Image 1 (tube, rainbow, N blue to C red):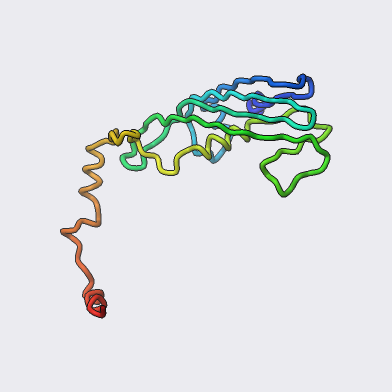
Image 2 (cartoon, rainbow, N blue to C red):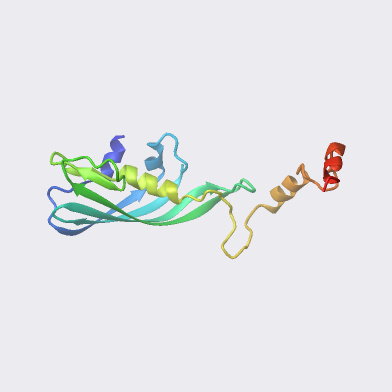
Length: 173
C-alpha cells in the first residue's frame, strides 16, 4: 500500500485556484488491489484540482490502454480507455452520510487520497462484455477459434430434438 501514497495530494499548502497533477497508472497500481478486473494497463491520469474556500473540485481525465481478453474468442487485445469524472470534497466537521458523491474533509485532514477514486473510475469504465471488434463492425476475433466454437455448439438445429411432451402442449392453442 506504500506505492499508493504517490496518489495523494497535500492540499493544505496549495493556494486557492486551479492546480494540475499527472499520474502514470501501470500494472503495479492494479497489483495493490487484490480482486481487480484490470491486471495490465498503460494509462495516464490528469487531475485538475480547484481549491476553493469551502471545497475542492477534482476533475479526472484518464486515458490510455488496458489489456483485455475477448469474451468471444479469448484473444488478448488492447482496450482503449477515455474516462472523464468529477469529484467534490467539502471541508466540514459533520459527516455527510446521505450523499456519497461528496467526500467530507475535516480540519485534521491535510491530504486527499486519489488511488481509490482512480481505481473505481477505471473499473466502472471497463466494458461489461469484452469483445475485440471495432466500432465499425470489423471483426478482429480469431476466426479459427470462432469456427471451433460453432462446431461445438450444443444448439445446432440439425441435432435439436423436441421432447414429445412439449408437442402435446403446443396443440392446446
